Length: 124
Image 1 (cartoon, rainbow, N blue to C red):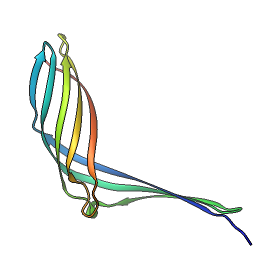
Image 2 (cartoon, helix red, strand yellow):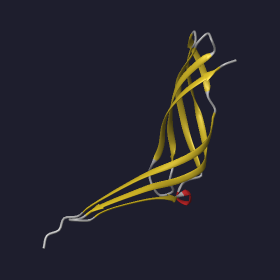
Image 3 (cartoon, rainbow, N blue to C red):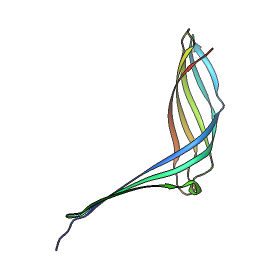
Image 4 (cartoon, helix red, strand yellow):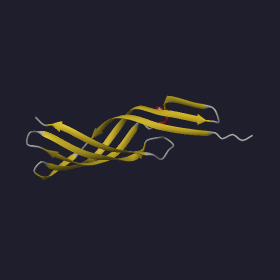
């Protein structure tokens, strides 16, 4: 008897940090700035969402779960930020920033955080 079965497994890690950046800002033209500096992050939450889909000949089954993995995640994250911003005369400003992780996020896994940030603000 021949039977084909497929199992698909997908996991998504969700890490939440309270971050403290220390940025130096350099104005290169009127309203246009470049910024760079270090950042430390303090881990608030670390979860993994797991989804398993199994398909056999006449049977299909799906299961999802969320697990806390804070015990396997490092409590601090060190990074370096680079970015650019533009401020309008009205006080409205926009910025883009790239966060380059310098330390591994997990205890036994070689994985660093890498984040793009987009910001909109107003200067009084």
